[in-house]
Amino acid sequence: MLNTFLKGEAGTRLRFSGMLLSAILVLLSVFTLSQKGLNFGLDFTGGYLTEFTTSESVELKQLEQFITKNHNGEFELTAQGNNHFQLREAPSDSTLNSHDWQSAITQNADINAEVLSSAYIGSQVGDELFEQGCLALFSAMVAVMLYLAVRFEWRLAVGSVVALVHDLLLVLGLFSLLQLEFNLTVLASLLAIIGYSLNDSIIVGDRVRELLRVKSNNALSPASIINSAIKSTLTRTLITSGTTLATVASVWLLAGAPLQGFAIALFTGIVVGTFSSICIAATLPELLGLSAENYEEKLDVKTQALMDMP
Image 1 (tube, one colour):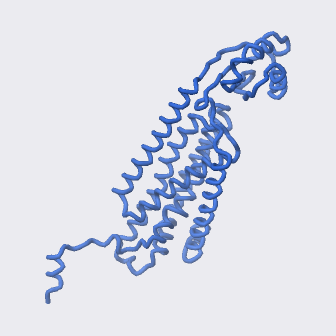
Image 2: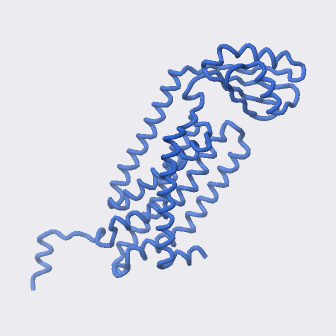
């Protein structure tokens, strides 16, 4: 049904409507990032990370209320499994309150907690991790741009790069909007999204290039050729994305809190990456003037003169 809808002017309208929607979402993401920023985790901000277990089953909210009575600063408590909890404290609060709340939960008979580990992450280490992570992200983007510059004609390359930036901005915008914790695992998921988004864009771009090189298609409009390319790759794209989403959804639901941010980012990146490979990577080159002439072989001057001789 979708393949049928992608034919003709209906498919072109669908692609351009999707591109307009993408532009609106990118603007909203940039606005959200500028206003709210990202909620950086302890990996980047520094602070104490304490893990403990309880001998009895305790509700998360009940435990949080109890710790609040013995903790004057801000903290974040998450459940890591059955009777296994993790508490994060800001650097300014951890040194003042760590002994108070730990003593309270270990001495309380109803909770009877046991502290498993307590680690401190300095702010300097967090800054270094953030710089190294951003450097890795930047290096990956540069490598992708160089690869696309060699593989594709510049219009298709620009479409793939814009689609890639679009995917990253939407994922960051979602984390900013919901104030989800942005840590090293989420940063790692952005690198995975770069690879996945590039793969989707290359599949569509390769098919567009192949159809443009077929001489029998020279009479067709670029829009018709792009629609045909998307139609021929759509089934493969949806199957690949669907199976990957099922795997990521399993990690999201079953792996617990430590990998939840990673799974959310990767799930969102795959969805928007599949969308952008159709509505941006394949549509933007058309707006930039992509045509079959861009892939015609150029004859040297001598060969052209011989062909022009009577």
